[in-house]
Image 1 (cartoon, rainbow, N blue to C red):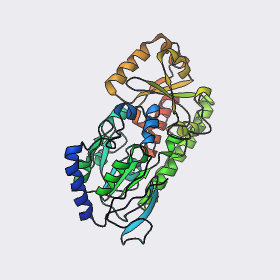
Image 2: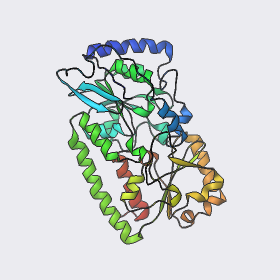
Image 3: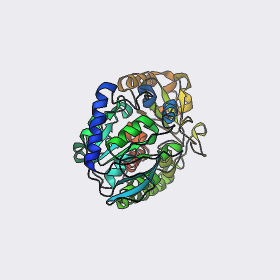
Image 4: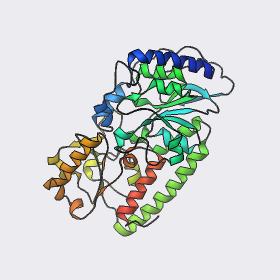
Amino acid sequence: MPRSSCTCSTRRARHEKGASVKAEGSSHGVGAFGRGRRLSRRGFLKLGGSGLAGAALLGSGTLAGCGGGTPQGEGGSAGTRRVEHALGETRIPSDPRRVVALDSFIALPALLDAGVPVVGALSVSAISGGGALPSYLTQEEADGIEIVGGAESGPNLEAIAALEPDVVVAWSVLLDDRLYEDLNRIAPTVATEGVAYLGGDWRDEARRISSWFGAEEGAEARISAYEERVGELGRRVEERLGTPSVSALRITEDQLLLYYSCFWPGSVLAEAGLRRPQNQQRDDGCPSFQEQHADVLSLERLPEADADALFYYVGGGRDGAEALKDRMTENPLWRSLDAVHNGRAFAVGGDAWLFANARAAELVLDDLEKHLLGGDTV
């Protein structure tokens, strides 16, 4: 059942509520994903495997109202707009100046492309194995964003409240009732759905996020550029290589995750004219976050990852993942793969191959051009 939220009528009211959350956090450990039902670090780092199944369960239940503001369903307030999102309807300012993005996978780049001023975001280093913010942000964009928590610790409500945001954007999968209520005490909170991780189209979510802020032009410009480029890339791939098969293998601190075609970046690979081996195909999509999005391989099952080309990347538990990668690449079964034997196994960046958005899609295309077409520019 969709959950409703309520917004506070002025920034001062939101700030006062944020201050009360801050004081509460001093004694209740603010920073966990949902106090009382914390999403474990291990579960979160296994994004797309069993971890998302556990995360999805955090979104169930009934949410108590946050108090104050204009209840949803009543007349609109001046200077606000009503938006529909993954957890219901929320009224947000029409022209927000300070937005916190607790969804660095999907929402953060979409907001920046739409020209929405983002002042805070979660660190993704524990997921991607890279820096605190995704590599596809410009230095200017990154310099203007404060880190307000991370994949290991969860969002820090004190840090979020200190930024006095107008709006918070979060990923519904990583919200439980208590955290959603706490965030709404700080600022109106809207939630993304993550359709690209369910076999849906990432473009739909990018358009939806930009529409919340009346800034569809930025999203459309990115999408149009991507579509033109992926179409041309697909033609070049077909001319040179036919329809090669590709695998996407993620390495965490203790797992090898062979992703199915319904999981990111499956749609990008398909639009580039690439096919997935039969054991990775999920043409009917990923029906829910309770379903597995990847096959968890042991080293003994490495042959199941073989394809004409194999793209692999570290993501989650950096030191442990690097150690597992070394064990994998030193294993005789790895060296026996056709992709490895033919020089078609490529190490790529985790943030591009994990985060479902237009900028990540462009980086995936960069990798395909570089490794499959010898660096020819499309």
